Amino acid sequence: MPRVTKSLTARSKHKKVLSSTKGHYGARSRLFKTAKQSKIKALQYAFRDRKNKKRSLRALWISRINAGSREMSIPYSRLIRSLDEKNIILNRKILSDLAVSDNSTFRKVVDIAVN
Image 1: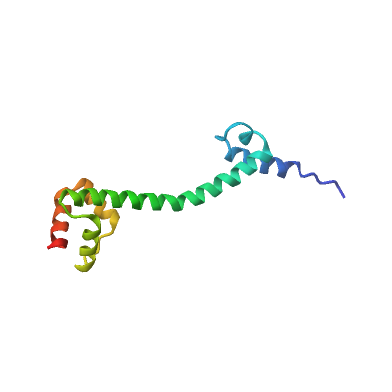
Image 2: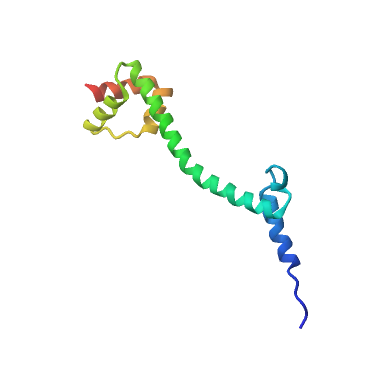
């Protein structure tokens, strides 16, 4: 029975890891062992930050809505409570987009909610 070496599969696996860590600094992109560790950590950061991105975007939307509503002398919390009481179903993403880009429509929504 002929002897089987793992050179071809090992080389392809190493190439795959090293190509995925191409932009990393120093040995993290050149040496297989550190590149493998770096790739694992990078994937952990990516997973975590996909969650944090949603969190930070929601905070941005809330601050935009607050800024737009305070121009009309109503605080954010009172606006959201009155929208909920009047059963106006607009999420924070849409409200912030209205506050930034279409101020007249946002003003109408606020007037309907408050009055």
